[in-house]
Image 1 (cartoon, helix red, strand yellow):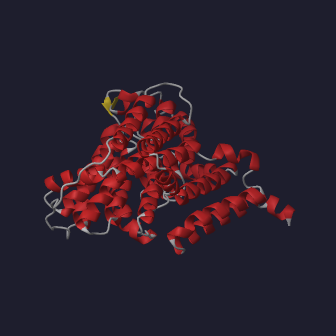
Image 2: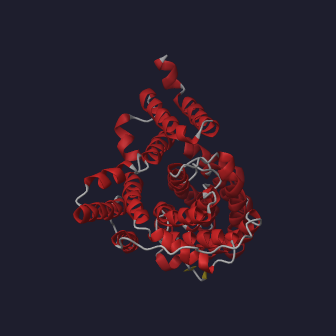
Image 3: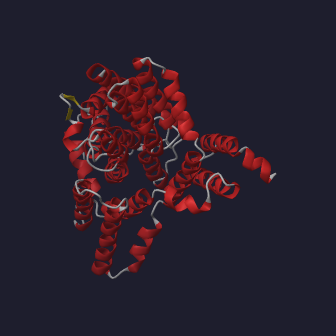
Amino acid sequence: MTAFIAANLKTIAIALFVLMYVFMIILPAKARPFVACITALVFLIIGVLPWSMLPEKIDWNILMMIFGTVVIVDYFIQSKMPGLIAEKILNVAPSLMWVTIFMSLFAGIVSAFIDNVATVFMIAPVGLAICKKLKISPVSMIICIAVSSNLQGAATLVGDTTSIMLAGAAGMNFNDFFWFHGRAGIFFAVEIGALMTMPIMMIIFRKDKQKVSADEHTIVTDYVPTIAMVGHIVFLIAASFIPNTPEITNGVICMVWGIICIVWEYAKTKDSATMWKNLKNVDYATIFLLAGLFAVIGGITEQGIIEDLADIIVKAGGDNYFLLYSIIVWGSVVISAFVDNIPYVATMLPVLAGVCATMNVQPYLLYYGLLIGATLGGNITPIGASANIAGTGLLRKDGHEVSFGDFMKIGVPFTLTAVMAGYLFVWFVWR
């Protein structure tokens, strides 16, 4: 039996990977962390991923960011600041439809400069507060916030890990995302895609024409959590401009500001019960889901499965540059709907560099196509991107379960529209 497993390890890994996603789709959302962690454990036991490699495959930076930011968010919510912000938005939005659009655009703008997961944890509490004031389900609004933050991550050098990897491969600095080699950069491709999603949201939420307004005035009880929220954002932006920072820098920033909130609250009230309550409120289900997925993706990466997928995509394009570009974009959309885009992009960048060297062309067109497809593709499913997992985790914590179908009703049209806009822009500007 052991010899059989060793001889068919890659095939078994693929089968388990597919089976994991099948169970994630058919089982309730609360079962997903168990499915991911059990699959990861099986990977470790049968040798798909060696035990010694587990620590390096888990993105500790993301997990630390989630833990620290959730602590900040809990104190932020308790301070009632999201309620006050919600009132301001309700007073300027002409209808519920525009509240959702404003929140999505706001999330997108912030996400262009802040990590996607941190953006969701910052903006989503405001969306939840708005929906509670209006006594409506927050599911659709939080999904829009998550997919918008995921979309805009590719707009700037500091918006997402994949952007940083692109900058390293192409030798780009912050300004090159706006204007590069005399042409409009990927920032404009992403922003055009974002603007094109507005009509989609207007169609999806066309029935939400009811007028909205704030009927009560919220009094903020403590401004320190708001300072912590703004402070950790400022620090995240500042850290992005410092070269050669450790990989866990963002995670440490979020953890430190979370600890500041805890220490401040305890110093003010001398009540340890609130501290333990907030620590218990951390979304451990999301953390374990992500940890399991990191291990599983690490396993299939270690077995060369992602590299095999990359080779298939490249070979399918042959010598036809437009066909190759199209396959890179849309193939990346499909793959990133189910596979974390970070290992995929890391694998594909050197592959595309080699292909372009063989074809004697500059790699920027394919690099941009890769980033557009891989970054936006995660918006199709609730587990295709860390931001989506964070958003659905907040909804689950608030008592709202999100099925694959619920998410895809918004994610699919949103993704196809944004990708198509970026796909056409990049081709006509960079072909």
